[in-house]
Image (tube, rainbow, N blue to C red; front, top):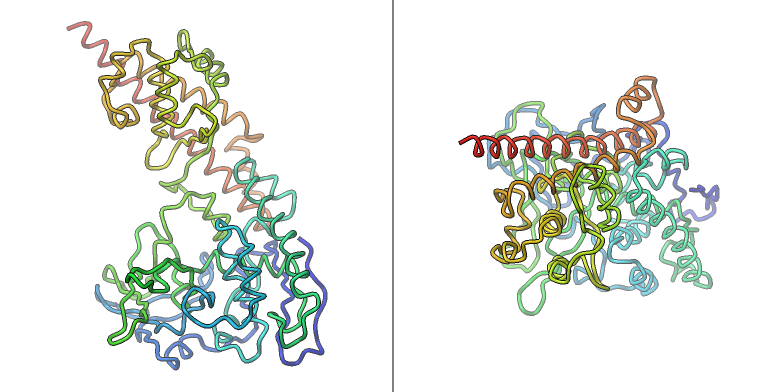
Amino acid sequence: MAVSKIVMASLTHCRPLTCAATATASFYQERLVPHPPDLIKWVRREGGFVHQAVQISQDGTNGLGLIASQDIPKGSQLIALPDHIPLKFGDEDGVDVVNSVLVNLAQKVPEELWAMKLGLKLLQERAKVSSFWWPYISNLPQTYSVPIFFQGEDIKKLQYAPLLYQVNRRCRFLLDFEQEVKRAVENLKQNDHPFDGQDVDASSLGWAMSAVSSRAFRLYGEKLPDGTRIDAPMMLPLIDLCNHSFDPNAQIIQEQDAGSAKMLIKVVAETPIKQNDALLLNYGCLNNDLFLLDYGFVIPSNPYDCIELKYDGAFLDAASVAAGVSSPRFSSPAPWQQQVLSQLNLHGEAANLKVTLGGQELVDGRLLAALRVLLTSDMEMVHKHDMNTLKSLSADAPLGIENEVGAFRAIIALCVIALEHFPTKVMEDESVLKQGVSASTELAIQFRIQKKSVIIDVMRDLTRRAKSLLSKDATALQG
């Protein structure tokens, strides 16, 4: 993505938005300014609380993070931010919105790219010398290692079509949205300009969207008249330096201020934290697609990682024949089987044909149920079971061992074909990594290795299950 070379040197009342937002040198770049203000002191000065043992640390593996300088007992309050410190989009937390241009632009952001909405607010505050949040913003990274800033060749090295689609979609959005922003501010006076008269290009928009997607949390925001609160993305100064773990030692909680409708955001030790331990939060049970797209890293052996496939009857027929499954009828189901497929939302005009393998479920329940049903001609047997049983991998061969083994073999065949769609093998990928590559190339290769590993793990698991079922069946016949 092109980087603007324009520097508004004459605008002494604003800070340049020019962003060199590429990820070619290393995963973890310098902060936005060489010597940013002390973030911990700023939080305390603004009425926040920071435990005396909490310190900012530069970790060679994870970049900036928080560590404990001494043992911290379980249940201890680590950080507390009063309501005015988190950075939120103005119209979501009850604050008057003086800049309708920014609001109108935010309304054009698709919901799935919610980070761009808050990113507009971030760019607006970054441009102002007088911004309340400058001590926080100045500590943000100069660059991000998300794929929208990869070189074209490194994007191709991801080798995984669903992610390539998402990366290209985000890049296209940023290029189109750049034009939206330019049209919106084209004839504005300086005082009405949301970015203090500065040019906002796709690169600076990408920087802001990446800053938000990698650091913001969706927490309780504005309180509605009925007492409920809507979710609102917000950037949490200092708190967002906690790195990720599926086994965290801290958690975020929200409490209402005494005598106020405003919320206090706290981080509390969920376990005892030893000296020099990093403070860790769980960012969510996400697959590696989302971790790479939004956070710029990949988690090895991620238990929530999965691959995405399209349910296709003709494709399943071909895969099943190759696997030795007798008489598959995936492309020509009987009317009663079509009804079951409709219940699974795998048949009909509004069908959702996206299915997954891997993750906690191992096999998408809709796919498993479809295979079980289409590999039997016994309609009565199928109707004896509810849909949840047919979708469950833990169900003990509900339609018989032969049926179950056939379903497993069909899925294994799908896995073989999915692996063949990757141009390289895992061993080849690992060999390239040993040669030394750029940071973005390394990320791309790590990502595709993990996707292939998911497929291999599914194949191994289903092969083991099939052998176990056949062994049970042979024992039963001998008995």
